[in-house]
View 1 (cartoon, one colour):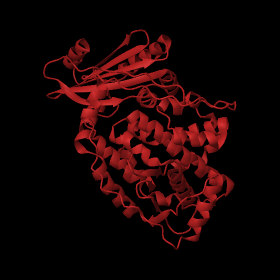
View 2: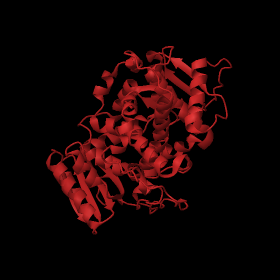
View 3: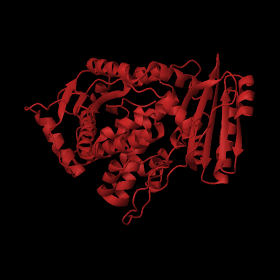
View 4: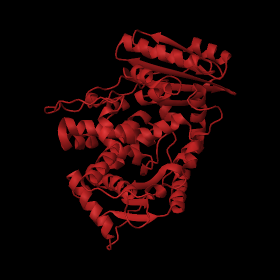
Length: 438
């Protein structure tokens, strides 16, 4: 579900977000505190996962597949930096209020070469078996159409949406360029150059263990801060140094028809860090200036809840949630995943209106799903905890409505006052069995 581990990407749809950035503070679902914070309290540590032998945390470690990365080789910047790149670097330094510690290697490629590089990296970084198992789990829940190959859908997104990437492992910036820098190219390069300057000061390779450990919710939260920073400062570059908007600016995006093959749920998750991450950084800058923005890159948010509701960063930490091993003969673990507020919100929006989805997911306080398989049957238990019994009931009712709008065998019930357990299965017999066992 995650973007390329060692490549922080700029997607073409981010350009539309940039164009509407002046209205970002009014975006539904984002909370923007108007008061300036005093000196913040020390950052708390996230709670440790449950380490019981049959816990979902242990199962997640066992099922996680780490990509086999080649040893990175740093790429040195050319001594002959194109003047337009050097000029844009200086502008990024001005709005970012930081200085590059090392020259940035920047390479312009055409769309075909970008597609080749994305595909080549994808083959290494997305394990087939892992995503085949996750495809079954997500299809059983009903967030993906039956038969969807999650890995192929992610590749379609990469081929259709990526217009540039920065690789923290090599320090290289690669982008689709056509010579002169118009509006679209300026934004793309400013976005990637922000990644480069942030990496040199805050070490963005700290994202790596979140992905290699399959800590999806924490990774999505951290990516919200990283991509949000790039969105924010790229927008500031265009605000301070306006670039001409030409009719051909979007031509660098290439053929976007590949995005037609990306399921709406997956597309929402892939674009989320750019959109809501941008709002997160706007809120932090208003609350505590660049010092608080920099702090979020030194100490990443640990949940998508903190990004969606910036006033909850850094002190509102999720509760650990567990789904123990299934006590049913013949069933084995298929997949385990951290489930955060954004995943649930995007799920709900597939079948209920946005206001209901936003309100029902806003009281999230922790979540995980665990999936099992037996022969051709699959079952998924999604357990969540909420800030209060009232918010648990609100989510329960939204999921109940969501289930009623789908043809997936499923059931949902309240647990222990502020908990909700939802169970999904490929058939009624599996649903009944798992409901009793869990």
